[in-house]
Image 1 (tube, rainbow, N blue to C red):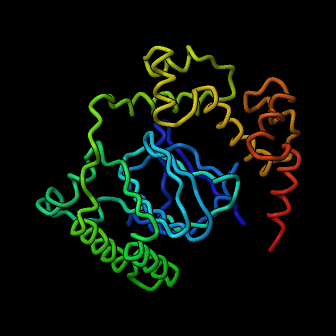
Image 2: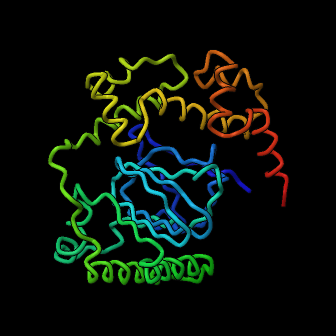
Length: 300
C-alpha cells in the first residue's frame, strides 16, 4: 500500500491534492498504518474536515483537545483549526476523510452570512464529535459521498456537494452546530502555536533549545510550555522528538540510508538515544520498523 504523506506549507497549512484542482473537494478512505509512525503531522487548512471511523480507533488532537474516536464515530474539524490524528495504542484504523472547502457552499452572501460564516468564524467551535449512537444519519451521508466518488460518474461532485448541503442543514436543524463554550480565561494563542510548530518543522535537524523554540513565538519559556501542553498535550521537546521520529519513519521506509545516518539527519546525535525513544514510541527498533514496512509494501 502506498505510504500516505501530507505536504505542508511553512505556516503548517496543508497542500490539499483535490481530485480536480478546480473543485476543492477531497474524498478518500485511509489507513493510519500508511502514515509514518501511524500519525499525521500537526496541520491546518481552510477546508472543513470530516472523519468517519470505519474500523478501529483513532486519537485526535484539535486546538488543545484530545479525543478518542471509536468505530462508527464521526468528527467534523472546523476550518483553520490545528489538528492531527494518530494511532490508539499502536493499532491501525481505517477511516473516511472528506475535505470540503467553504467556497463550495456557494456565493449567495445572505445564505453564507446566515448559515455558514458564523460557524466557520466561531473561535470556540473547534470541532463537532458525534459518537456512533448519534452519528448514523451523518455517517450515511458521508458514505454516500464516498460511493459517488468511487463510482466516478460524470458530475458526481454536484451530487456530493448537494449531500453536504443536506448534512449541514440537518446539523443546523438539530442545533448541533452551535457555539462552543467560551473560555475567557484562555487567551487565543493559536497563531503563536502555529509559529512555534512551524519553526520546529523547519529546524528539526538542528540542535534546538527551549529558549529558541519560545523565541520563535515571541513568548517566554514558561508560556511556550503552557501553549504546547494546552494545544498539543506535550512539552515542546517531546513534540520535537515525536516529529523527528515521524521523519525518521519516512526515511526508514523510503530510503536505504543507514540507521545512524537517519538518526543524525533527524537531529539525534546519539544512536542509542534514538533507538531507545523510537522503541518506546513504536514498540520496535528502527531496523525492525524498516523490515516491517518493506514486508507490507511487498504484500499484495
